[in-house]
Length: 106
Image (cartoon, rainbow, N blue to C red; front, side, top):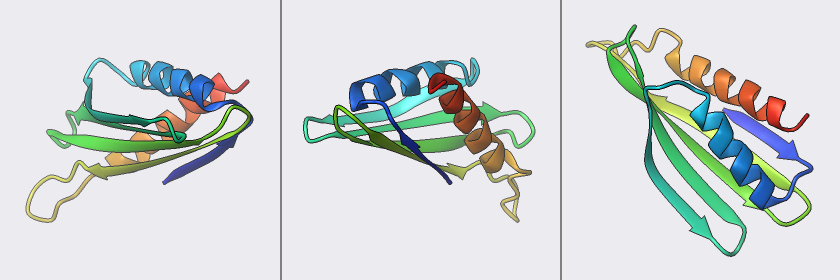
């Protein structure tokens, strides 16, 4: 799980999330999105991984106001075979997203 507190407003964080997701690779697809005026933004993406021949999903939740925001991301799916082995795909997707978000806040 990724949990980041950012000193950026929610609108800026939404732009960072969109940019970070676009840099995660060409196999990334947006599966769903929810935006609320009450300071909530949810984005669900899927990324195909050849090593498991399956998709991993990343659910990204951003909450906040004009001054500060919190971003939480949880990866799921990506298992393969009878034992549902993910070969580290979930951790890899979360780490890649974290690195992209950290580059945004610099």
